[in-house]
Image: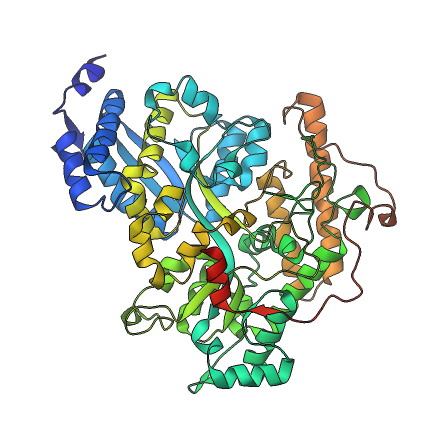
Length: 576
């Protein structure tokens, strides 16, 4: 009670670190003037929003909370800058820890399993939406905002402005997570090389069509071969036509569950995820919440022809067209390696690395010119031969604020205030200029990004286009992401090592996924662990009963049709 009374004063002196500082309007005005520009709000509107935070945070002033996220530039900015702003404005101290993605997932899983409050809030990928909506261990934000958390929910939050909200919404229509950052895996290429007249003529003589942005995987493969095998050197430097990674680590599994199979066309038609078969190959019938299997013998697609084709191409391209070191790279090593300037294209490139790829040449980035304009561009992902119109075309990470019922309510409320602060309209444009991971439609349409767009290689145009809905995270077919995701990387690693063929590896993966889901089914039937929405596996039948008959797609007679490309300028015109 004493803390509540003290906190209500406008010029509250609160303990910050080892000294005393004021928390209130003066600090908000200073941060708005010095840091939070530009903004979609006027200065007066920013001040009004910050005053709401000051008032709502008053009961929690002096509290110290802990939150966790993975390490990308956006979260570094939050951890290093926005925590300080939040503390000075509200009096709440936030320890925003940054760990690797695998460690974040492990911490989330540990808190769910043990009920111990490890962190008061997590930036947890929306890939876990199927898990959170089933286990009901995460806070249902829709009900929380309308009920227990109404007093700490910003009236200016504007959920409709969040472009990734469909990814964080469960089958019950409830929002379980609040997007904090988003990035898509698009196609990346060296436009300066593609525009070279001599290279254009040479490519057309060899392949019979124009060197341009590949529309299909056939063209991507031709371009990879052209630069790695035919061109080999540019300006005396060895160059390559492809970049990827192959290190045996959890990253390798996410490389595949992050829509690689659906880019080849392995899933079903449907957005944001295929129904009945999603990008993991897990089958769940329309109108149901019960997954029924991953194996083709149960109606799934994890080891079907399209999925096996996808894994085979990943392995072949990594061996034949990427730098030799790529096989030992992980996710965090492969993407920044492009800044060395020796790779022509990458089919699976995350826009989260745009911030690093636009750094000046003086910082070792060889893919921008002397004036800071990129020599590269991003474009839509090429489609595999099994892809059909109406399918998702790639992955979009949506790191989203997630809270668990095991967190004490007062600590969760303070963390919820911080989550809203770092995603608020007051802060979001500035944060997006730092991290380039858009979450708000109003932000990406702000005039400051119109001015900056020529130096961002197509990022702004993509996020302003209707095409952005074709890139989506893992969806609700996956009943328990932490348990199933960890199965992938060992099987994929065995392909690259030569221990198994792609078909053998995917057969084994599908069988292990079904085995794991059978255990979930038993737990759900015995103790309602998944709220009745756990797996209910189909009986196994011969694969011929499903392949091409509503299950996995039948193998194509020709998996390498004629390559097709498009001019980058035509893409930009369509996006605009």
